[in-house]
Amino acid sequence: MAYETMLTAQDGGVLTITFNRPDVLNAFNDRMIAELGDILKGAERDAAVRCLVLTGAGRGFSAGQDLNAFLEREASPDPPSIGEHLRAGYNVLVTRLRQTEKPVVAAVNGVAAGVGLSLALACDLRVAAENASFTLGFSKIGLIPDGGASFMLPLLVGLGRAAELAFTSDRIDAAEAHRLGLVNRVAPPDDLLAETHKLAAQLANLPTRALGLTKRAFNHAILPDLAAWLDYEAHLQEIAGRSRDHREGVAAFMEKRRPNFTGE
Image (cartoon, rainbow, N blue to C red; front, side, top):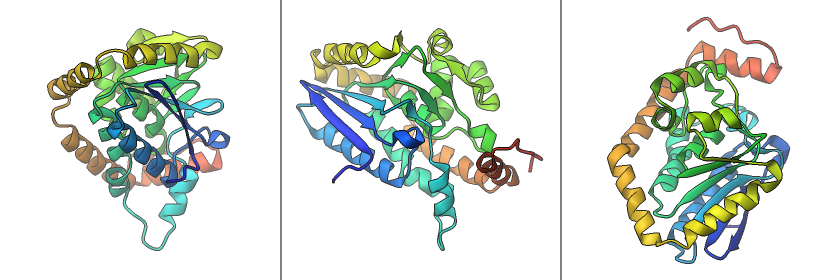
């Protein structure tokens, strides 16, 4: 596959994958989902790849789902449901990130929002630039956290704090994310990639088989029903996606106004 929305570079055993739609803060469209899935599939099978780094080009890690692409899909003659979109797209990515038996590190270089944050949460480790920011954002358009965030976030920060972040869609900075355990390390913006690659190189030089089995053990202990959880999350998102509040939230976002939610 020729990649239009992704950049890849390998240095030793470290493969760096860069989301490359900087003009829209690396918001995901269908092409981007497919390309990332293809790269992850290849990396999982490539013995020369012993650690993966995910990052974003430009000012952001990822602003999440591209709502313009979402609305275009909704306007098509036979639009897929939100639930099926998740099952065929983001759920596949999250499953690959969790099941590849190699360390995956997110280098969060700016905003990580919506499903962009979800994908960062699915990685094994997260290093954030000091100027990075984090927000779920789903509640602002009448949806639930998806891309695995509905269970990864409570695992990382606890149920009460996860509920606050999900309900309010508050934006937090890198220092607060580190305090909560959302990220493992924080680095100056200019040093982010160097610090992340230093960590990734360390991981790549460790016994890959043992690290992979450790990841498998962790998954078995705390994510034994990953596929079922992702499917149920998609089911709930399908219900939320049919609500009036979702339609109002998207309209308000596109029109850059305050939404008027009615609870319906």
